[in-house]
Length: 198
Image (cartoon, rainbow, N blue to C red; front, side, top):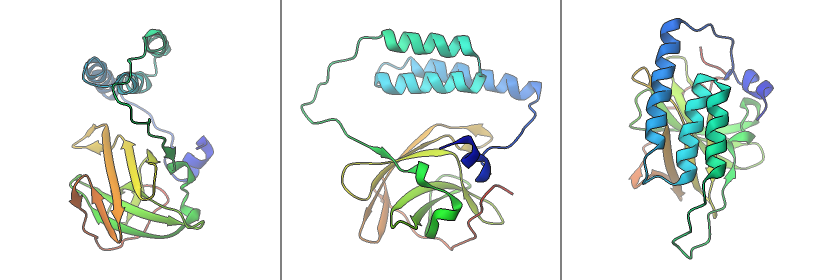
């Protein structure tokens, strides 16, 4: 997805930071770097979390160090004979103009809903949306469709209780039922789909 698309969708806007916000970002980056050391996580997740910390701070030396240390690691042998999952990123296909219809579902994530979007080419996929008094809008996220139909993974970092939180959501659809993990999601009233935050 290009920066022009992000700007057009209202996900990219000019912003002036304060010294306090910069201090908070460094604290979040420190927390992420500590989380990246968790051994029970796969190397991919450790790298992703550390890379995310570098993106928050925008410090090139940290990004290069992480990249080089990630590339220098020996891959861990696979412990399963099952084939690796092949996933396709479908969130790049989203634009407000491509939306034909959509359905909204309640979540346990305060201030957010899941939108099952149906785009003009007939494809459907879920997206996490911020709920405002004027409507809903998708936040920046990566949505992957797994092998087979109607199974998705959303990876994003919404603001929850004034802090960014990295989340991983697994969703599936069985008939007309949308399921998050093992819980059936209930639909909620349709509100306007906004192109950008108000």
